[in-house]
Image 1 (cartoon, rainbow, N blue to C red):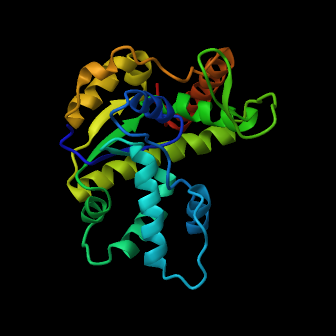
Image 2: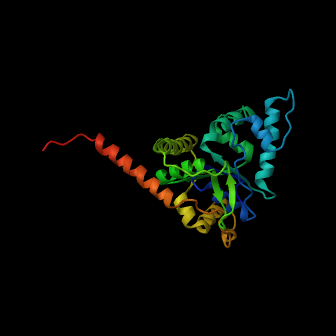
Image 3: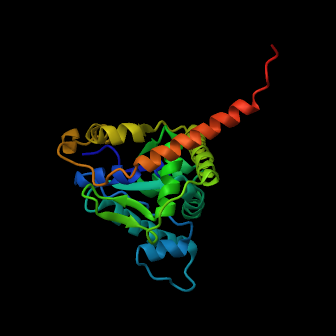
Length: 263
């Protein structure tokens, strides 16, 4: 039995969180983690869980209904609640958590009251160029995830041929660096020592990294045996070409900014 009541994947887009969520869910003992508070809107939360809008209902009462639905969904019949928390969802989520638990002094105290003892998992992608390329390519093509057999799992727009866009990749690159910095700052302020996992390790050794998480949760690491990735990599030759072009432009900009040396 786990020594924790919940875990939170602290991450950002295109870091392998969908892969890790599917791996954890497939064990049958680690809940059903997902982005239960993805949109920064209470109305969106209600709609996501199929909950009615009650006219005149006090906000804390509404939030209690939402959090109860989230915990039920994230446990999926197990004793463990799993949550994926993207950095861009963080501020609104914490603001509403403060409404629900106004008597608590810190984010960590509020999370403990909401979900019980929580393991924090910092899932990050070391190669921010590849992360940015992956994000921009998914946004343009509309395809965010596919299964190992090639079946589309998540498409958010009609198919479109992606085109290299330096400015878009640069904006995502800077944003993902900032997201990592913000997570690290928050961990430090809350005195949290998270379990750290990288996309590179997870995608290269999914069962090994899944076993690490299960062990840290106090669960049987053998549950990772036989669990296979439910998503396939979308990176291809186009992704590699974009990453090379972007790095080359960054290098050229860095070299031109350096003062010339006198002979």
